[in-house]
Image (cartoon, rainbow, N blue to C red; front, side):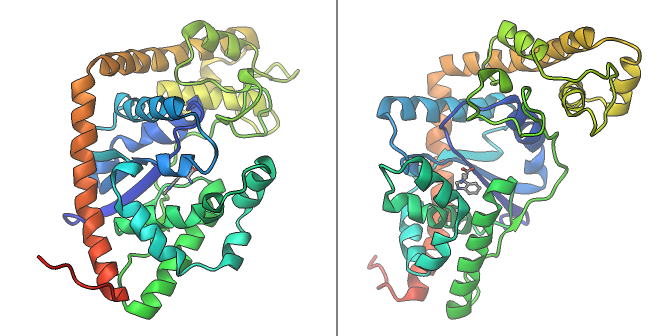
Length: 334
Ligand code: TRP
């Protein structure tokens, strides 16, 4: 708890471009969470180097992501948006937690197995202990809730296991985090295969709308979206492509799927897809404009980076000192 508010923590990787799915499904719904939670959003650059990165690209993307979060409406005065690498407590706690995590449990992580298969030439120790760094991220702020997708659930589980193990030995040191189940955003699927989630790593560029796509690309991708031959605009599992387009349209314009069905009853797919494209453009164009404005204001963004790193460090240090004392590290001499 911070100021009587529960703590919410989320980390995001700056690799790959964020999609409309990330925005409608997550980001857009986070802008008011600070009323209820003390929110930390960390650009997890330390996680990114578990896979080889081009330094200039990583730096650029990290900043772009941080800027995008602010442009999307997360108020940086009310939400702590910061770089993981600027708060050394993440690395320090991760080391300690490494000593409370078993090789066996890390070997069972499906993401490790997937990534090891994908990067067979670079199966480094960091890739293996990735979930421990993630546990450190979360536990460092005494986090109550973590908004995670299904792919990160196993990592949240191991975080809870590590925290419980530690607390079992040393008393109540860590808050045991839970998955955040709030009002969920829209679940946006691939435009080319509407049975899969829209993903920033999809190889087919037409499958995903990226937040920085220009209006023409957005319109084109919507036009090419896979539908079916039923010719009816219905929000039904039998028509996953059409259902997905209804989800997108309704999330962009804050309408219910039923309203959209009524609005387009008896009309054709071509016309509907065009309307979806315009709806997406109406959301992303202003977002992109804000990104570009913020990019120009270097000192404003720099100020946020500095202040929020200091704020995060303050809370991180509190937990870290407590942990260090509990495990028997010598007190500091002041
Ligand atoms: N592993 C997460 C992902 O790839 C990112 C992440 C790092 C994270 N630390 C976190 C997410 C802490 C939630 C909480 O999506």
